[in-house]
Amino acid sequence: MAKKFPTNPSNPERICWGCDLYCPAKSLACGNGASRTMHPVELFGEDWDSFEDRLEKPIDRVQEAGPR
Image 1 (cartoon, helix red, strand yellow):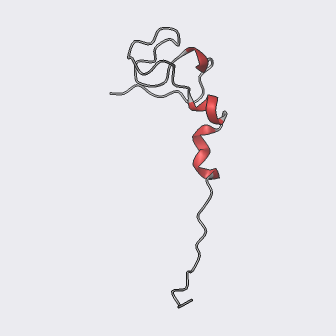
Image 2 (cartoon, rainbow, N blue to C red; image 1 turned 90 degrees about the horizontal axis):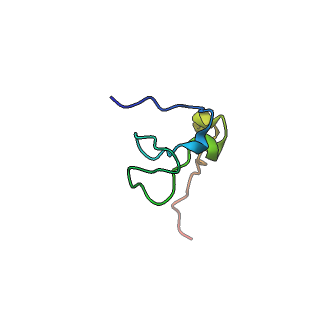
Image 3 (cartoon, one colour; image 1 turned 60 degrees about the vertical axis):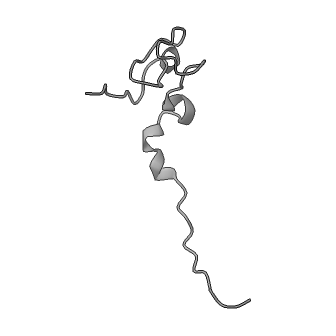
């Protein structure tokens, strides 16, 4: 069973969020690159988990197939 992903951790900068190990930022054990993976709250703000509500909706255009 996977660990529950925290939606708003108190100090996200201290942990690498790249895998389920949640290693300290200065001691990466999984070898997931040279730098830590940031938590979504660091990238998108505290309301990152409701991000899909703000996505742009595609414009539904009717394209005419007539000759030009």
